[in-house]
Length: 278
Length: 278
Image 1 (tube, chains in turn cyan, red):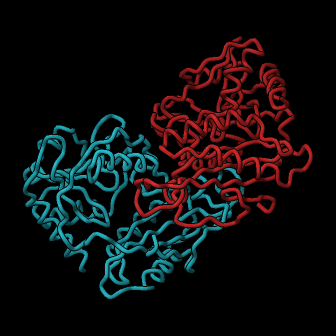
Image 2: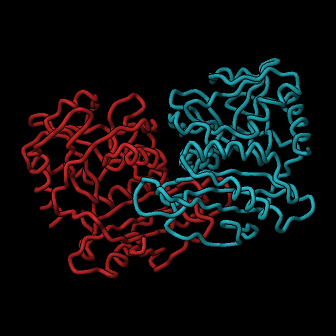
């Protein structure tokens, strides 16, 4: 926390003017970007998702401001080639009491830049994957978006610690595997790479998209979105999850299953690092 | 907005220190109370629901602070017998980046007190009830709570204006009526008073509870929570919705149906005003 700097609408700040609709209702969206020096990595993937989210939530277009403020915050305090993490939040801003969005709303862009403990260019240690009873709600209207209504993931993540695991598997309302608390899930089955479809819940991760649209093909894999059964996870030759900060992390243990080798995940990770370097 | 005063942890304030988990993830709860002078009305109903919510979300107990700060804010600037509205928000507070709640979290209590346009002691004019395509997500774990993840209601409320109606009916994922965007729904059928059950979605309103547990019996009605069909709404002898600010508001029109008289809703409203006066 001491190493976090915060910007509101392009200016350094430490406090948010109230009322604010992100605070009141979670009325907004966010992105978590990896910075290398002052360069936001895979920026277009983040901006694409944010653009879609702003449209779905009926925000006025504020992508020019977003890009400007983001560049400003990323450029500040950049230590050479150092990795940092930048959280970009777009709130619908202030307004009178009540759920209805004001007709003349002025979105606010809040950016925080933090130092990073993990090293995104190293292949992460295999994770202990646990389980949580917290399931994704079913809500097709908001599925895929990285909006600010994230209580499900907060409660799921709280289950990592007592179970002494690195991540937890989250199921959907029908009991099918959907993701981990902070990342998308993939399994390897021969030449196939499968990930849960996100029509009814979940977040369409930027790394998930990159893997589906690009990295799978580079590694000679056939990627698909589908409904996954728990039994398929346990039968998979490899399992991994991904997000913008850790990249791709192999699962080492889940229930009574252990995976000692992760050759496909390693190949994908090499291809991923090449994308980061572009 | 100009007539809103804001308190954070018991002190007047206008800005919120960042990071804050309510802003970042909607990690918190709220209550909207009606004040008469410096007296919060039906306070115990609000504190009961908040207490349940704090437990379900795994917050540390902060009910003593909540009561103290609430009394302080309610006592300030009280104009005689004037009605005002007080929003009480409990955020999980600050903490490092990431979904997992910090072990040592210190909840923040944010209170805003605003003037009121409606007159809560008058029977409201019959409402035009419209419809929205925004449905409640299915999430039994959070159902009933007044938490801060309210994007569904924000999007639903946005549908009132273009359709020129006072409120919109929200369905659940299976297409059954569940509530309006900012209130619970009741129908009158003879001596029966029915309201949708909230096992899978929705907010357990304080006025809903009061009606179910007390006002219905006072008025000689048999109240029940149940699954309601759209056809039952249209066949009802009366329809109304309720929340803490407007009290009970009769529905005057819905689709091609008009209700000109609201005798049962009026009786319930009289009983409601007596409760407010206690």
